[in-house]
Length: 355
Ligand SMILES: *Cc1c(COP(=O)(O)O)cnc(C)c1O
Image 1: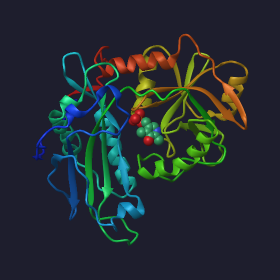
Image 2: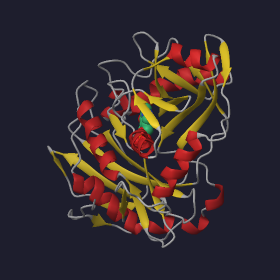
Image 3: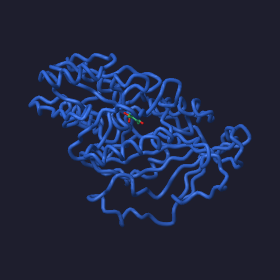
Image 4: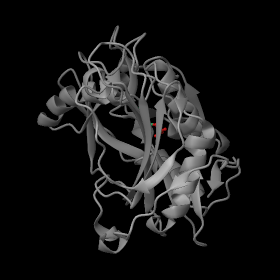
């Protein structure tokens, strides 16, 4: 896959770079941003010329619709540097497609490919020094769109801003993750916006997650809103369960985000000879498997951590500790996937795209 760079992009360079003041060895996730950002405004029914400009605050009218009605969507991607100093993206077409699906669901305009992918390509060319070599180093990419039109009437905005910002990141280790299975709260509901990468899905998650944190759990495994009997996502990640040597994950639905990491794991694990079953995963069968010792692993899957192993879960006040199998699927899959992303393992899938 090639990234198109047809759009004429206006480029305003920063006077100086702050790169030398950044301690790349001690980054905390998502706090530092590169010298430039890309913005593209939507006015009068069309997208204007994209601009790459110095990273700086926005000025918005206090009545801008994003503040009142939450028209806000985003994506999360990473750029990686290989041994030869080449910069690579992982399946960026998937993020582009998903972004526009999110846009449609939030009644926002779709972003043209040459603005999203072409603009990202150009921005990364300018910021390639910020992508550090070495396993675990990456440049986190955050494209997002907000409703900038003013007026508190509850209707979709007619003005929007698409933006891409970039943040250098080290490999993400969240410590031991214990989760609680949701019995009351829901992340998403049928007919809702759970399948969109919308800001509102995150704000709704913070309070139940805070309650879980207070009880010593890092994350919640979300269940279906109607019956709370099916396991759907872990925090803001898709989730996999290993019973004996079979991997299970729920099918994509209106309540589950179509994760790029999830779909890549399904393909990769299948190719490596692991039996992967995509079907509803019931709370009862996981509790049963934990009791009879066949539940081997649970792990979250998403761009930030790639694979995030879970050490145990709580359900109806009972805590179930997971074993630590020697041939961990989570570890194997993470090695394979990051190996492809950093160009250390041959990419037979055609997932990686060079900048
Ligand atoms: C972003 C996200 C994921 C993971 O998607 P990736 O494309 O793998 O990064 C999973 N679940 C939710 C709710 C998300 O927002």
